[in-house]
Amino acid sequence: MPRPSWDSYFMKIAEDVALRSTCDRAQVGAVLVREKHIISTGYNGSPAGLEHCDDVGHLMVDGHCVRTVHAEVNAIIQAAVFGLATRDSVCYVTHFPCLNCTKMLINARIARLVYREPYRIDPIALQFLQQAGIEVIQWQPESAPQPE
Image (tube, rainbow, N blue to C red):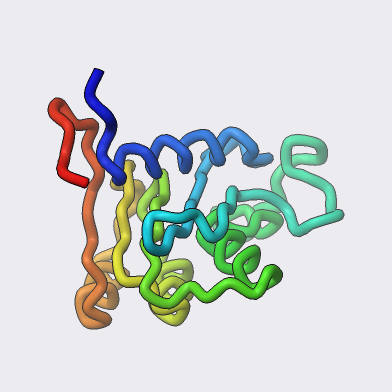
């Protein structure tokens, strides 16, 4: 049986991380990887210690749940809490990041973004990623193994 590519391996982990999400609107998972090693993970849900949407419902403002911290932000925060640098890392995320998450990923100095779902792709987010020199890849399941 052929080994999965690194992108497939880490995307599968992001998909598993998304299962921890406490938001029933979209389960999103993110994994930050540097030099083929996971430095942090994040999923969308309420701030630590606060009530979850799946317990008390969504807190909607202008069509968005403001109770939820996005997966990408939680991954960046987790890296910060444990003192792990995000510079030159790869972000694997199940859904394309919103504009705010895109800006945070840029400031976290990621080098590459790999996403699965083209969920609400903001053209400004794409423009910012391009201007920042970040490689953006939409992950597709592979039919053949890729090189190490």
